[in-house]
Image 1 (cartoon, rainbow, N blue to C red):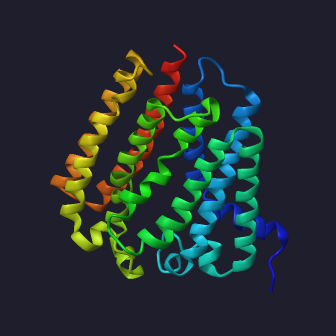
Image 2: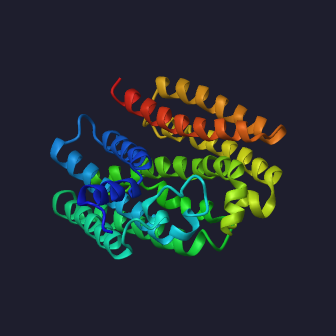
Amino acid sequence: MSLPLGQRLADFFALCKPRVNTLIVFTAMIGMFLASPGIPPLGRFLAASIGIALVAGAAAAINCLVESTVDAVMARTRWRATARGSVRIAETAALSLCVGGAGLWLLHTTVNALTMWLTLATFLGYAVIYTLVLKPATPMNIVIGGASGAMPPLLGWAAMTGNVGPEALALFLIIFIWTPPHFWALACYRRDEYAQAGLPMLPVTHGIPFTCLHSLLYVVMLTGASFLPVTLGMSGRLYLVSVIALDVVFLGYAFALWRNYSDALARRTFRWSIVYLTLLFAALLVDHFL
């Protein structure tokens, strides 16, 4: 029996991964603020934020649609409407394309063409290249596919300036390097579910010690990348002090995970990685206006 319209829309909204989308839009907004000498133009700021959110939500829904059979065997995702089979495939696909198309149209008509094309590339990178090609094929899926997740601040920068400068690339690099240790912490304590689903995640194919060592190495690289905003003149003392403290804590988690792994510690590391990125970009924003 068909669900009521309100329930179907609520299910679709959940498939858009609003919690993940919030962080995506937040980092895109920071990119917009950092690209502007003062307060960015309100109209363009709102249009870019909404457009990026719509396309990101559509990409997430397509991801859920493609991975419905995989999601059905994993405790963390079996609640999704696509995994339960409570939504129609055609309906979800159509809504995703409409929502994503609306976001791209908004970006093209009210922001600029560069932002629209970069956002479309991000959509294709996540929904097609990562989801369909990389994730089921290689344990390095999140390393390569992480490029799509690192795009939001670059999109925000392009929305305000119409170009992509070294500052935007620095923000991209920070998230690109942050993504593997963030996701590998999750994959470590969910390794049995990924193995059951047949996905070649790094902890499944190479084991926990190997994964934790590489996570530590990535956090070391992230520490170096996190200082780029200072060296490029994007930020000053407040950001410098903040990022030193954030890096020390993240390094501590990564080192402890490598030396004495436990699922509980992996969960805390995963949660901290989200806090780390949020506070790092918040520090960039506050420092920008000081």
